[in-house]
Length: 127
Image (tube, rainbow, N blue to C red; front, side, top):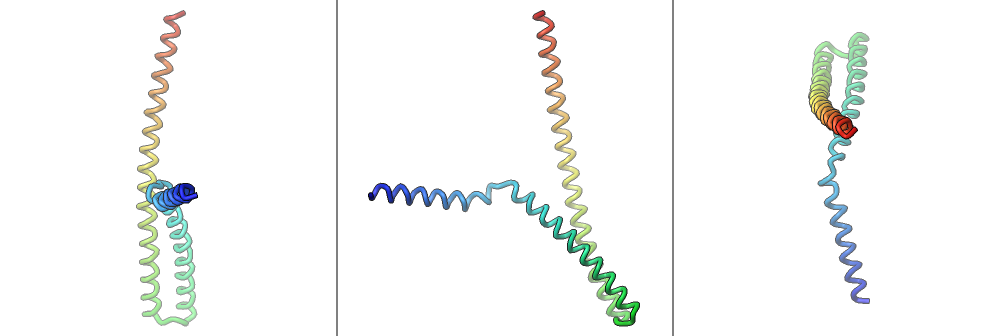
């Protein structure tokens, strides 16, 4: 009875350590996070555009003074510019990653073609 409880306790501790350590070693989490941030930024950007449109309408209907309109417009445009800058940086990183992936695939395909050519040549020699 005592041995079983010790083994069960050890297994429980190992399981807990595994679940604690797993997020630190997962590589997919960062890509999921980046995708989530990208989608959130896209939604936020659309909301900011809608807000800018509403501010414009309020100003044209004389609900806002010119100074308030200018201050609010600058603030929201700055937020949109920041989001667009982040999107462009993510896009550049994505393009670099795609290019490196494409280069790697091309190298692998070339190696496969070379290996197939050598196998064909060996088969011709045997015939």
